Image 1 (cartoon, helix red, strand yellow):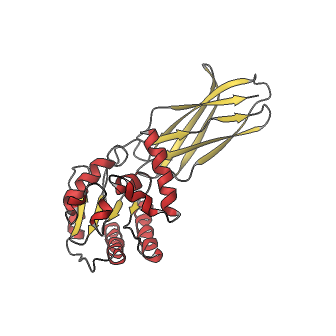
Image 2 (cartoon, rainbow, N blue to C red):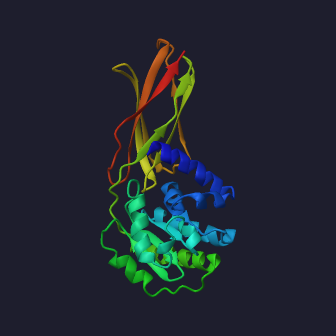
Length: 266
């Protein structure tokens, strides 16, 4: 899982830089992109303004403490190795939802020329479906479909239809750190969580002896934006290798097992 997420993170950066075509080489591009992002759009991509509106409406859902991921599929090519699911939005929603289930179990909306699909880990989606049913697909182009997806996200949020229990714990990815006695060390890590908000407890230890406990209050947790926490290394500490261990907790109380990384002090 960790290896896949590192590869996916690199892919997401490439997409932002305009290299979306690379993603289409994967078996199911949306499953990779949506691991670290909330929006998947077709290739060639829609206009920047249309994509920005979709992302803004999805972000508004998270601001209301809801969760949602959206995939816009304009052609069979957007489905990679499963083109047979094109224009079968309900089937593809289930397929993609299962692909994402290790890190996200929540409302997943699919927009295709044939209509909408909605999946929430096998849980009831009647409230979401009631909002989507009156919506019409206004065109088959990438721009039109993405615009429709933006409208769908906005209306789902406004209707309060995205009430879905978060059952997945955060995942933490750390980087080894180095510091000097009497100076400040920077501890870097990323958190992947489908609520996109976590608080963390960081324990710094030398063997079994805990040297510090840092408590980070609830804040935004987006994988592409690593966290940096500083710690003043005591001058009295002996040189050597310590470790810092992180436990992240999301708003519903899900938390990961401690993730520990070396901290070298000289």
